Image (cartoon, rainbow, N blue to C red; front, top):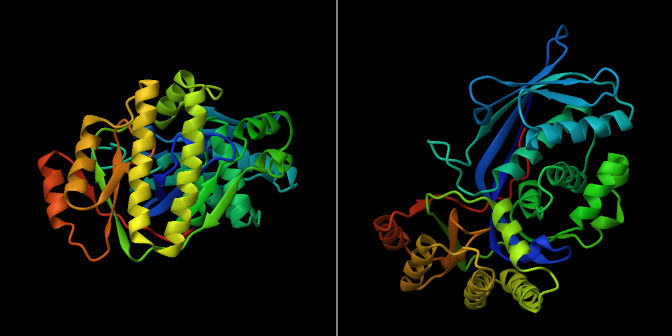
Amino acid sequence: MIVTRAPGKLYIAGEYAVVEPGQSAVVVAVDRYITVTLNESASSEDSGRVHSSEYGRLPVVWRRDEATGEVVVEHHPYDFVTSAITTCERLRAERGIDPRYFDLHIDSELDDADGLKFGLGSSGAVVVATVSAIAEFYGLGLSDDERFRLSLLATVAISPRSSGGDIAASTFGGWLGYASPDRAALRAALAAGTVSEALVHPGWDPHRVQRLNTPTTVRLRVGWTGSPASTEALVGSVKHHSPQDAPGYGRFLAASSEMVAGLIDAVNDDAAEKISALIRTARVLLRGLHETTGITIETGTLRRLCEIAEDHGAAAKPSGAGGGDCGIVLVPADSDPAALFAAWSLEGIRPLDLTVTTERRTR
């Protein structure tokens, strides 16, 4: 039996801009996890199974096509887990490792008791945990960087607009500065060639993962609106309404890049006032994007979340795609969050008990 787990994520700043190759964001890993348990299938079995609450009571059954060796999934759409299996199986075949069947059991802490997602990057975490488990099963000997790359290749096969920031957080943990690769080029390389070739394709060149110091002068607080949002749909809508060559979008990208660079320095310097000021700048930039695109990034509930935080002397903004999900707040490290949480609760905003985790992977 192999057990792996990967943490969820929250964007601190740089969302939307980071979908463009080379653009940066600050992202953190949080202490809620996806856990994957892998067991080799019985020798008499000619299939593997994936058990997850996402699939209902019955498992998803997967097999290999006898002629091509490709993974075939029965009675279920192709999704992130099956993409992770497919991508790992391709790499396994390229390395000349004999195929075996295995069963996966997936458990998530990234949603509430009713199955509503908190917006903590469950898709990225499940891919990282699944890739980690299969890589160990086959003895692929992947480094952290290779696990990140393999996970992102599996992700962009399903979600081309995914920046990979969630994959980075789930792989490396802690506070990170992240710049995205050219995912369109990587997706094309994966479709046209081998996984091994895609892992070293020039499309990776713009990407960067920079481990940041953990600030001690501020603490991260998180509120959940209770309204899940679709990152893929929201990011795609902004791209549609504000194309890359539009002057307003170019200014947004430039301003976001400058803001994120300053925030990385401020986090590394543990400069609380600068961190708070730049979080407020990040919110202003997102509100400007909201206004120029017509896409609802800061909902009424997220606006109240931020206003209440400001009333309590803290800097706040939506996290991730917005349109629902979470807002993040940076508060002085010695402050008591009780009054803030109580005020949020009166507005129907649920405080989440989250801390930043440096854990990468647990067996």
